[in-house]
Image 1 (cartoon, rainbow, N blue to C red):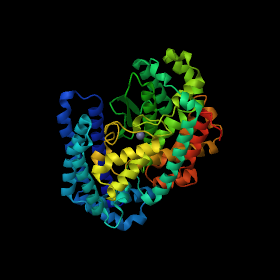
Image 2 (tube, rainbow, N blue to C red):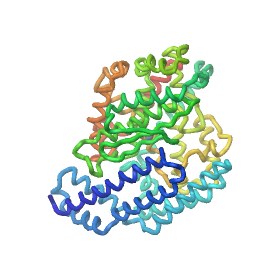
Image 3 (tube, rainbow, N blue to C red):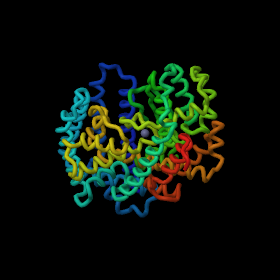
Image 4 (tube, helix red, strand yellow):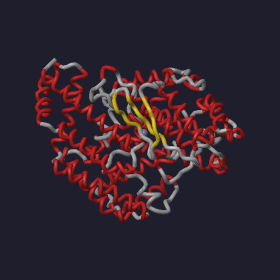
Length: 502
Ligand SMILES: [Zn+2]
């Protein structure tokens, strides 16, 4: 093996070991750390992240990557991709001055704190000066990385490599028009006007919720020796090493479906993390190429699979034994309760029809902020106007409105679109899966997920980040990102649910 390549692999191994250790400390902090240990844990984590940063920016790594650049064509396909990944990261790291990185990480903590206080006071004005600073620094960062590119594209590329607003604008516009049409039609239906939240009055003991969550997770993952789980306030998935993927769930007494759907969502992420090709083990390519593609895997299970009639046909008899209070509710009734559409103010609690409109609103607003077309002080008003216009609802205060997500307080501009990209990808994937295997829904109605798992592994998971998301999707689904499959899926499912003739 080329000597430089050997050196790179050695450094990559160290980075993987450090990254996995940091992930484990982070997992522990979110799930079971004793309260008093939190400050020292912050110190441990920040020490590890500075070690990782030093290694990533070391002159030795820089020299090795530059030397490898000259011999790239002679390397294997996998090694070539690994070198490209490091070249790309190095390019970015070199462009952003260390002083900027340090100043931003300080601001990030202050800004997150100001966001929390603003939420307590229900006043955006408390957070506004920090958001202005965060925005200014992210704009500066985008200019450092590439002054010729539109800043939104530079920031978007961190989460969705290769994606641009030029590609997204027409897709989101079509998505928005389609969703507004569906929601308006549903709202006019008799079923919508009569619908009641019957599940709110049913008792779902947390102990039984835990048993159901464990059951569904194991059915999806089927890899008991490679994953584990715990509880945390905000559910998440993390990867400690190639054979150690972890998910968390939160249980809420009054919201039984929350623990169920969030467990399924995180299991979809975990299945992806467990499905990378063995050839990529231990390399930087053992990762999804983008946030959108990762999200497509969680949403596919959360929506297309476990919110389907076929799934509940198989699962409801067991579900009733866990929650006997449901005995008075028929399978058909339960299926429509699981899929009730209700335009609301809060993104993380909404249904699958309205979800992407929450994202479109954030996308339009953050792009306007970065382009200087919208001032931070005018953000709450712009937010409320869009909610009124697209969803027909108006927040009573800023906590229900512009202060609900913490993403912007941490400078995560360009992150939101990945949720909608993932949702659209999930519909494209599910349609293709059904075309390739017409019996798949029947299999799901028997609780058999073998074909789903096998197809996903073959077409999506095993590639890791050998290719860009768009390349993986185009090959698997034979088309580029489009809202059409998602809109068709929603119309077919929900028009029938709400008794609307197409
Ligand atoms: Zn997710």
